[in-house]
Length: 102
Image (cartoon, rainbow, N blue to C red; front, side):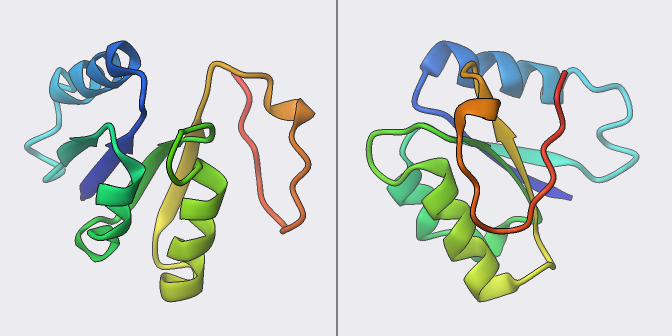
């Protein structure tokens, strides 16, 4: 499973990558992760990944626009998870989706 993690906050990005790297069964499940602090760079490499952890608010291409591009090209074959320090209940979502709250 190839994971792309995209967040413009470098501290948050390092923390998420650290959690993935420390996952004890990472090798058993074939998990690899690549960090992106620039959403435009990730947009050019979408086809390389199976799962996307996206910050919804980024300066270039925001997470929702990036998710829309992923869905347009790959429909439901890719998994998208939004990561954010913001209250996602304040966001209007026009397309059917599921939000997991912690």
